[in-house]
Length: 117
Image 1 (cartoon, rainbow, N blue to C red):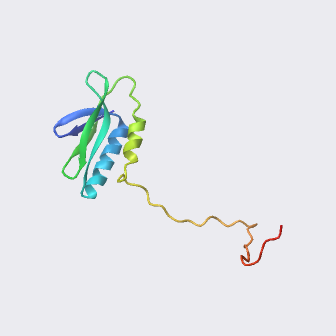
Image 2: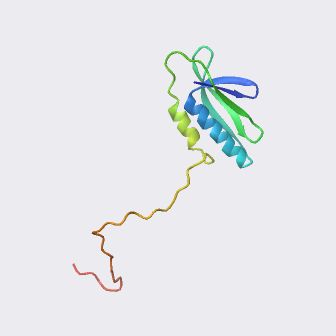
Image 3: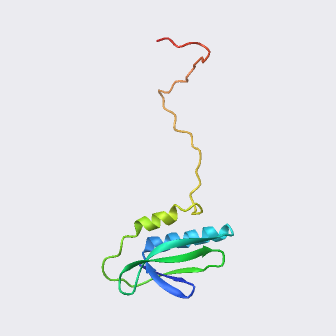
């Protein structure tokens, strides 16, 4: 579990939500923008709630580890939602030619000739 500090307040959330939030906050700030997001949190009495944050330029987010006993809540769906945000950093895609197979034969089609059935 992690403590997320934002605007002088601290909330508790899971490691994956905190990591996704920090990455998204940096990505939004890099674009010179700000975005409103919701994250799941655990209140002091261990109930699940939601926090609303504005992330990006001028909005600092700090994530730090915390002591937690017992089962952690499953916030994987919320973490995935943050990672699906349009500005969340993605690994670059590279065009890679598939490996050649020895049985591959060049295709020599003449599209001007009718095919035989």
